[in-house]
View 1 (cartoon, protein in one colour):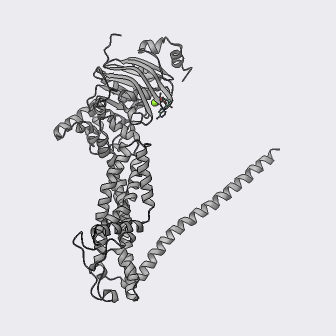
View 2 (cartoon, helix red, strand yellow):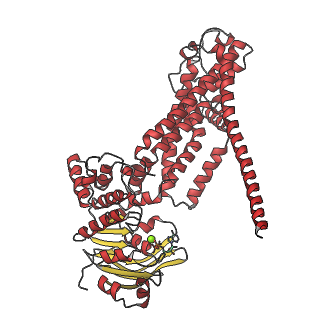
View 3 (cartoon, chains in turn yellow, orange):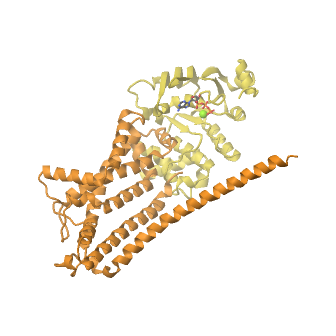
Amino acid sequence: MNQTSRLRVENLNVFYGQNHVLKNISLSLPDNRITVIIGPSGCGKTTLLRSLNRLLDEQEGVRVEGRVFLDGQDIYQPGVDITLVRKRMGLLSQKPQVLPMSIYDNVAFGPRLLGLRDRRHLDDLVEKYLRLAGLWEEVKGRLQEPASRLSIGQQQRLCLARGLAVEPEVILGDEPTSALDPQSSRNVETQLLNLKENYTIVLVTHILRQARRLADYVAFLYFGELIEFGPASEVLISPRDSRTRAYITGEIS
Amino acid sequence: MNNEPERGIQRKLRKRLRVESFFKLLMAASTWLVLASLVLILAIILWKSLPALKLSMITRNPGSGYYLGREGGILNAILGSLQVVFGATLLALAIALPAVVFLTSYLRQKSWLAELIRFSLDVLWGIPSIVYGAFGFLIMITFHLRASLLAGMITVAMVELPILSRALEETIRLVPSDLKEATYSLGASRWQTATRVVLRQVFPGLVTAVLMAMGRGLGDAAAVLFTAGYTDKITTSLLQPVATLPLAIFFQLNSPFPEVQQRAYASAAILTVLVLFISLASRRLSRRLGRHKIS
Ligand SMILES: Nc1ncnc2c1ncn2[C@@H]1O[C@H](COP(=O)(O)OP(=O)(O)OP(=O)(O)O)[C@@H](O)[C@H]1O
Ligand SMILES: [Mg+2]
């Protein structure tokens, strides 16, 4: 693997109270590639993803040990500005969470946080990122409508546009298509494939076929342990570990 | 052969249906009781006040001899009540809103401070308003203040504070944590999340809470009894005494003159209409303001 990685996890352990849910995970996420995290329900996929942008910190009773490096800086060091870390990663959640405001304001939310006020500039950004998320044509005539009126599939692409507008380097997705119909899922997948040229993408999914369609690299988690990590062609087709093989053939789920 | 168990099942089914229809009846009866008491109260107040309901009631101050049954109205008390309640609600909101945002967005929910604040609010909620009245009175005596609009506002604000805080906390707590996390993951700070997203999401609920507290404050007699004083004029300064509707009702009802007693009921009708108006407004508003709200 001759890949550069701006996002690196080192000896990460996560506890919910006494419950040890991530066990000594070390992982380098290759730049400009899609890394898909797979594994049975409850194995810690969501937890791993949320540890990357320190969203775990918002939960109560969580303890995180170990290090996560973003461009060489450990984001768990005391004194690190969490909001700056998060601005460098966009997050797509399982159920799209639009903000209680217009379509336009949703996309402009991030730039406005950064202090951007110029209307013309904002207009341009909103259009640019809606196009990038493949939503512009559908909503260009109704930008001032409440975002909650969009269909679920459109809402997820709006969340993508909103995340991109913060100009992150990394996109995190936690089963971002699981609430969508097949057509919308395809649509989001297409956008992600288009985006990987310029972004580092980390996706959680439990749909193996989706992993096959999207993944450059695959990480297999099992009961909080990273069992196998490597290029998709290796992990999905000829896995080294018997547990990975069992999962891929559907013997464990 | 399998007729026996069949019959058993049928018997059980019939019994369940009987039980269900009994409880349905009970619930319907309770519902009607609630409606009927509302209608009854409104009807009686209106009927008793009919002889006294004249336009001058709401357009004039009490004239000389008003309390003996002569000319005048209770404009002073209507305006006074509104003055007190607007001031009190602003004051209560100015304290409740930051406190609740701090409680819900900054504190760990199980921390001792959060528990302490919530417990205090529960206790404050349960304290009868006459106690706040007495407390306000004590403060006035200590600082040699007269009964005044300001003292009334402060005391009514104390009555409204726990109502407002609790209603606000309940609406803010209903904001999905996923929504907050979505905002955090865009790099928003807690403050930005609270002011730009959470308050926006709960804005209809916030308006409802404010109007609800106003309704309570408007009708509370005990809080203003010792603290606001009473006057037959319209109050123009925070340090002057102020007339209020609950006290207007109280004084007039105590009168031996039937004309004045009728006016007490008319005052009650006016107060009820004001409260009703506020409830209706809060319903209309919260529907209108909820346009952007996500569910
Ligand atoms: N807030 C929490 N408090 C306590 N335990 C939790 C919490 N969230 C998750 N867990 C536990 O941590 C473990 C990992 O959960 P996680 O959500 O990361 O799994 P997952 O792989 O994403 O599962 P799924 O495929 O079902 O989404 C599970 O055993 C879960 O019960
Ligand atoms: Mg999950």
